[in-house]
Length: 92
Image (spheres, rainbow, N blue to C red):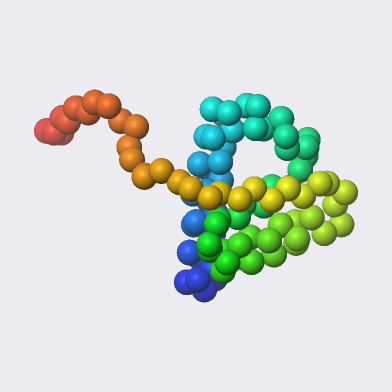
């Protein structure tokens, strides 16, 4: 796997995680996605990623009779931790 491919895979995994979180918080949006659909994530103004993602979705859909849905992410908030409190204990 090339460095560029690894970058695309990592970005896709991050977006999948965020998309799943969004769906959990906005179930009405999820109702618009057909059952068993292949979801292709797209990012506004990132044509290299979008081409890669569409290609991946097309490969996945080949031979399948499942709907393909493109979801375009147009804005993301800052990455931050959800941890509200920590404690540290040093092992002996």
